[in-house]
Image (cartoon, rainbow, N blue to C red; front, side, top):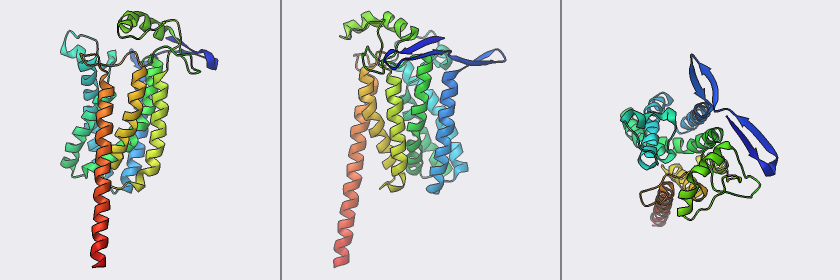
Length: 290
């Protein structure tokens, strides 16, 4: 249980990580919030799929296998770049102890989805456009699981959204010496950036804009590129504020590397396709004149 304060907003919360217990098994808010995000994602995805004439029955099969792959990929990403050393394979895969990386989930889920689409004879790029248009909704909701767990926050701040709790104080106390070696000075007893909130708002705004643009997309795969650009751009800067980022052995934040690569690659793909379409229109116009 955490006592959470937003001092400058005058807000105080008492949050219990456990929502309820069922047959002696604790059910956590984190999992419930993620589940709600996934359900809403699927409802929107089915609506978009019908617009693009995608068979929703086949789409369910693709969603199931890609979701399993996403969970495994998110955990592998965290284990690969996280600070924890595990004693066994089962400890690595014990997701109930926490630790997933969204980029690992997205990458693994999309790769498996492409193969699953071929298996179910669905247009893979159309499916990816539908899925990408919904990702930001699930991510925007899912970040509130980090609020309940009091994780995914940043360094100290005096802005109006500054947040403090036993969780932030305890964590910063445990890593302040390590952060100092990286040039980041923190005071465990001061408010921190609620980076989960920043990312949630960024994702939900992006979701609304992508849905509004969906029917205007110019080529298959464009929505996937737009997702990568929007999320990557925001994640790069938000990640820079965080104190619990997964990093490479050289200390470089992994999510920032992936963000830069995906943003640049996606911009390149969009520019290439727009130029290609423009040239095709020019050729067609010249042929008509002849």
